[in-house]
Length: 317
Image 1: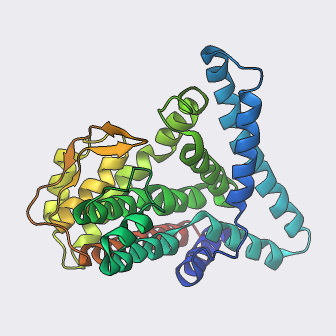
Image 2: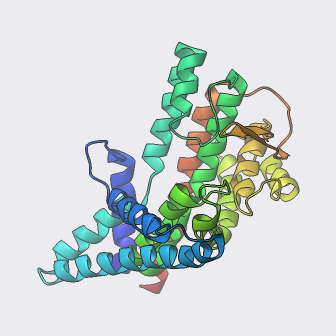
C-alpha cells in the first residue's frame, strides 16, 4: 500500500479519536492569517471593483501555492531524519485535513443545547452556520444542524480524503487552503463579492466531483443504518440542484431523503432573506435524534470512502 494512503488511514483514526481539540494550534489558523494579510493587500489604496476582482485571483492562487509549498518543505525536512519522522508528519497532516469528529461533536453540542432551551440551541448553532440564528425555531435549528453536517461531510471529510489519496498531504493541504479561502471570503455580499469571487468559484471546482461521490456514499451507507437509502437515491436525483451552490444540495438531499425530512427553504443572512428551494419531502418534523442519525450517516459514509481508498491502495501496491 502506498505510504500516503497508509498515512491517510492513520490520520483518519487520529481524527476519530482526538478530533480537533481547542488547545491545538491548527495550521488553518496560519492559513487564515495569510488570507487576512492578502485580503488587506488586495484592498489597499481603495481599489476599484475591477482591480479588486483581478487581485482576488492572486489572493486565492497564492494562498494555495504557499500552503502546498510549506507542506512539501516540512515533509522534505522530516524526510532528512528518516522514514518514520516523515511518515508521522504525513499522518499528522492527514489528520489536520479531516474534521469528522469535530463536526459530529459540534452537531451533538447543538442537540444537547436544544434540550436545555431554545435560546441555548440558537446560540450553539450559531457556531456552525452562517445564517442569522436569533429567531430560529426548534425545527429550523434542527434542520440547520442536519444541513451543516451533510454539507460539511463533503468539504470537511470526503473531499480531503480524496485529495489526500490522490496527492498525499501536499494536495490535501492545498485543498484545505482552498476550503479555508471559501469559508473566510467566499461570500456574495458587498464586503466580499469582489475579493472573494474567485475563491468561491475555485471551491466549487474543488468539490464538484467529491460532492457527487459523497451523495452516492450517503445513499449506500443509509441501508445498513436502517435509514431509507432508496428514498435517499430518489431525493438526490430530484433535488440535487435545489441550492444556490452547484454542490451543496447533493449531500443535503441524500440526508433529507434518508431521514424523511425537508431541508432548505428561506434563511436570513446579515439581516436579509435569501430565498432557497426546499430539499426533500416533509414526511415528518425533524427531531433531536435526527442529529445523531446524521452523524452516524456521516461516519458510515466516511468509513465507506476509506474502505474504497484502502482497497485501491492494496490493489496498486
